[in-house]
Image (cartoon, one colour):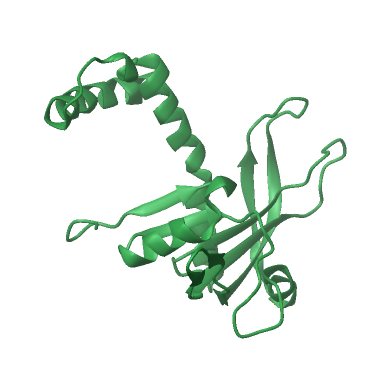
Length: 190
């Protein structure tokens, strides 16, 4: 659990869009922003997540910096934001049906006025425990998710730049001081 006076936010891409990471965050009072991969079924309704989002009003527009990809240059995308709060059906697992995931905030980020030559418009559906009912709150969620790139670059600098994994230290009490020093080096590498 986060120490008193602090807040942890688990930020993840589509690879974490399954039941257990969200359940674990809820159990340990850790906030989360996870990019959705599936059109999940809603609990208590014969409907799916994207249908609920389609009915939600547009909260506003903002811009998102999109990183360069193979064949696509970096650009600034103009997006509109929608938001809903839902309960999601729990999956079946060995041992039976899991309980629903309750009170999940969902922020849709959809690119509008897609520039010519862009093969895939920006479209994110972000699952979150954070407030997201207002435009400002939804923008905050989007800002947290876009920070994921910096987090990934930091870990890359820590692993590749400082070679932290090449250390032959095996015990936590010895690794922690090394990582503390190398973390500063990794930040400088960024």
